[in-house]
Image 1: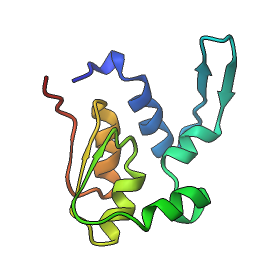
Image 2 (image 1 turned 180 degrees about the vertical axis):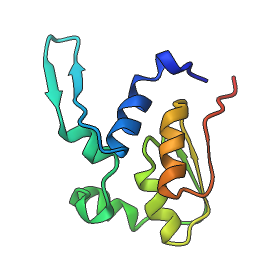
Image 3 (image 1 turned 135 degrees about the vertical axis):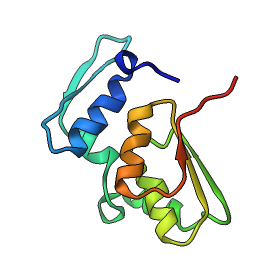
Image 4 (image 1 turned 90 degrees about the vertical axis):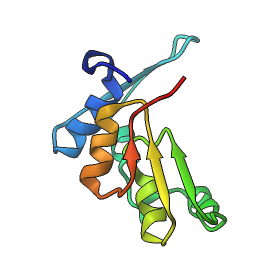
Length: 113
């Protein structure tokens, strides 16, 4: 499990969830640096705001769901509302906390090797 000082992604999600302004900066190995205020909003977005491709993919989900790398839980929450038995898992303890605060029934941050 990540220590608190290693969980930059979790802090970003938690701060955004709490209404604080956050910026995600993506730096790629090709030199591109992309600061964005839209990524955090995307990570916590509702189904109606998903891309067409994501909405189409959601129609094919059947049975129980293991959401590995669940982040803020947007897929977990949507599928849970659709009646699926969902387990959301993330290495980030704060991301899992956000999932729980948003209503994800089953989520955990333990990672087994």
